[in-house]
Image (cartoon, rainbow, N blue to C red; front, side, top):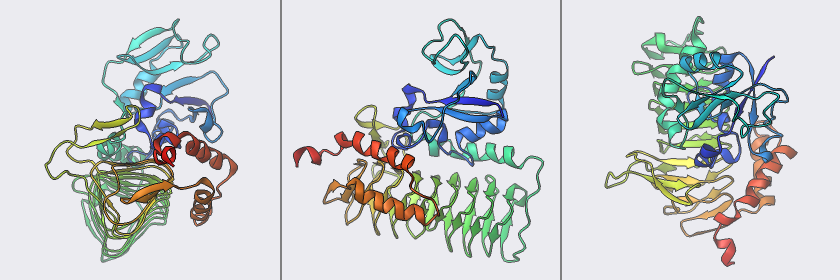
Length: 398
C-alpha cells in the first residue's frame, strides 16, 4: 500500500503537550477517529510519522520519497482536493504554516524546500494548535467522521424494547454492540457506537457522541453532547464536551467537563472537575512552550491529563488544571493547577513517582487489557521521566 508522512510541526507540537509527550500530533483522537486515521480514510494510503526521535521506533517513519502532510491539519473534503492538486514541485501553505509538500530526491527533509514553488491554500484549514482545541473542535469532528464512516452502510439493529431513540436515523451501531434500557437522543447530533461496545441500563446519551470499540457506558451515566470515549474505556457519572483517547476509565459518579484524558488514565470515584471559574473569567492553563499560564480565551475549560496519570477517590480538580504523564494524585483539597509528569501527592505537596514504582503500576494496568509494557514503550516513558525533571521543582530543593 502507498504511504504518506504526517509530520510534527515544531511550532505546534509543544503547545499540545502533555499529549504529545507520548505520541505524534497526528495520533491525537478528535471526533471518532485520530487525525492520522482521517487522512488514511481520505487518501486510501498508510500513514507514517515524522516526530521526535524517541518516539520514532513506536511510530515509524517512511523510507520512501513521498507526500508529507502537517500532522496538526485536520482534513475534510476541501483538504483532499488541495492535496490532489499539489504538484511535485510545490509546497502548500496557509500563511507561513507549511501544510504539505512532496519530499523527493532533491530534499532531505522539510527544512530544504526553498527550490519548491509556494502555493497558498484558498480556504482556512482546521489546525489543532492548542490542547483545548481538542474538545473545542470535537463536536464538529464527530459529525464529520460519522458521515465518513457510515455513508452507504446500514446500522446494526437494537432488539431491546426498553431503549428509547430520538432521531434514530442519526444513531449508528456497529456489530456486537449491547444496549439495554438506555436513552439515545441524536436530535442535536449523531451517536456512534463502536464494535463490541456496551451501553448499560439507565444511561442517557445526547449526541454528538462517539463510543469506541469495546468501551462501556456504565449504568445511569449522563453523557452530554460533543463527547468522545475512545476504545477499551469505561465511563460513568456525568460527562460533557470531553475527549477520552482510549484505554482509560472514568467509571464512577462525578463530573468531567470540557476536558481531555490521554490513554491509561483512571479517575477515582466521585472525582470532579471544575470547568467554569466562579467569576466567569476566561480560564488560564499551563502552557509548556511559555513556561507559565496562558489565557485560553474560553469561559469553559476543565482538565487536561496526560497518559498514565491517575487520581484517587473524591479528587477535586480546579478549572483549567493540566496534569502531565505518569502522575498519581490523591488526598483532600484542590491540587495545584499544573501537576508535572511523574508527580506523587496532592494539595499537601508532591514528591516524585520514581520510575521503577511507576513501571510496576503501568505494567499491572496494561496487563488488565492484555497489553504488554514492552521495551519500546518503557523507553519512551523513561525518556519523558528524565526530560521532565525540571518541572518537578521539589527535586531541586531536596
